[in-house]
Amino acid sequence: MKARNVSGHPVVIIGAGRGGSALLEMFMEDNLATVVAIADTDPDAPGFALAAKYGVPVYHSAASALQACKAWPDCIVYNLSHDDTVAAEARKVFGDKQVTSGPEVKLFWQMVTNLKQTKNELEKSQGQLQAIIQNVMDGIITIDESGLIQGFNPAAESIFGYMQDEVLGQNVKMLMPEPDRSAHDGYLHRYMNSNESHILGTRGREVTAVRKNGQVFPMELSASEMMLGGHRYFIGIVRDITERKEAEARIAHMAHFDFLTGLPNRASFLNILDHSINLAKRTRHHLAVLFIDLDGFKQINDTLGHEAGDLLLKGVSERFLQTVRESDTVARLGGDEFVLLLENIESSQNAVFVAEKIVHALTEPFDLNGQAGKVGASIGIALFPDDAEVAKELVMRADEAMYRAKHSGKNIWKLYSEM
Image (cartoon, rainbow, N blue to C red):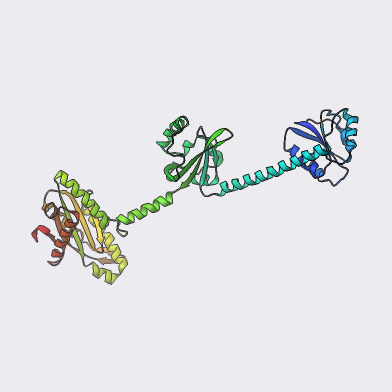
């Protein structure tokens, strides 16, 4: 047998049963030893099939295997057979070389079996852990103490739009928008020197992140620290909360704005008015509230249907917004009632002028899905501070003036001070 180059210490295994097969498998997975031959008198020994897989020469007697391995005089002989003559055969070939056999081999085989079992259990546990990491819905990002990304699971790929091989070894700040990106290295450096952190150990901290396409989005981050192999690592559990924030924004909008017209609702208008009154008190400016009730809306709603009524309300809202200044506020209180806040007016005549513009703006019919619809407006006007100095009272005064206008005719306005 011609000597082969080996990458580890040469080994001869006598006995290709379960023990020899396990020993062969262990050696083939470790570069510390190279099996140069395996022998067994049983041609169906399980170790032979494994030897064929790895290209290890097989022999059907211990003597022939030992003779074939004379080129490696320093090889180690493991006798896992019950043949006591193997030691004598080894001495004939290698001189005084000792053969590992009997209780020593049995103990070694048991150690190999236990190690193999432990390895299998570890591989199974690691496989389960990897399966969880790969399939969990939250992104998991691992970085080292330099901020370089060491782990990036599929959920993180989906969230950020990067494939794993695009980010491994890159600084995690690539996932951050400014100014966090520029501040990150300094933050990490300070933590390494002081151990003071506002993020580590915090669950569900809301931050902003940036996708591969440059889109900035809201993210929930839970960060922790671990030591592994004498090295420090940081683990971030991340979740894209874009949909949740959008839902929260919709709910907040619904709480303050009319769902049909998008105008501020009653509660929102009163808050705006209260703020404007406080500001006007400091600046000694005047305000006006115009309470508007549409004339003829009920008839359109009843004859043409609610869809036409909704279209009319939207159209009225648009015309009101076009009539007033950007600094003024138009709100819908409900039904066909609207209210306007005119900021910083010089006198009641300014409010009267806007009321006349409102009446004029409604003279043109509305297109309600191909049918014409026409409404008018009864308008009541109350002034701050002349008529009231509290938001709710000012709206009530304007409402009272509107009722006076409505009973006095249509498309007219009334000042509360003239009632």
